[in-house]
Amino acid sequence: MKIKALITLALLLAFASIGLAQAKSAKTTNPNVIIKNLYKAQKAGTGPFFQTKSRVVIDKYFTKDLADLIWKDAKEANGEVGKLDFDPLFGVQDNTHTDFVIMDTGWGGDAKFGPATEAVVQVTFKLSGKETMVSFRFRQQKNKLWKIYDIRYPGDGDDRFLKAILSAN
Image (cartoon, one colour):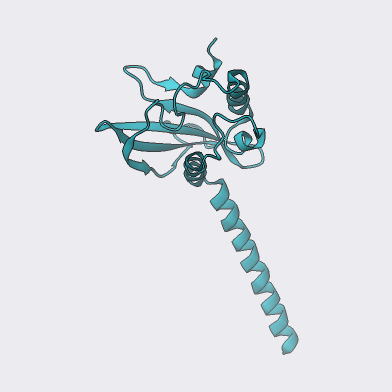
């Protein structure tokens, strides 16, 4: 009787720890959580942009291609203004914004959000009373982690993309 109880208890603990590990993994890799953490880090001065101390900080959020461009721009700027002459999280130089909202993740698998390995998180806010939206485009990596592969900014008639801005000569 005691052995059955111990086995049952051991199984319950094993399943509970697996569930907890999966929940923790899902929480840290969910694109929405990644965006929340990115804005929080940038606000605290520990974000990936405009720094050359740690490539790891950049790699945490971005695919290798985009991380390479961000790192290159920061290094070449050498403490000055590089191609990123605006706040990349807001798409503007003056980010005095109101009504900041991180929307739910739009998951891929359809025409709107792309293939199943892609997702989009949109951030809305008001600048000078005008509603603005920045879209973070995610791609799931081979290790199942979600990373930002591009950021779309609204423009006057044409949208701008971070990768194109950083790739321009």
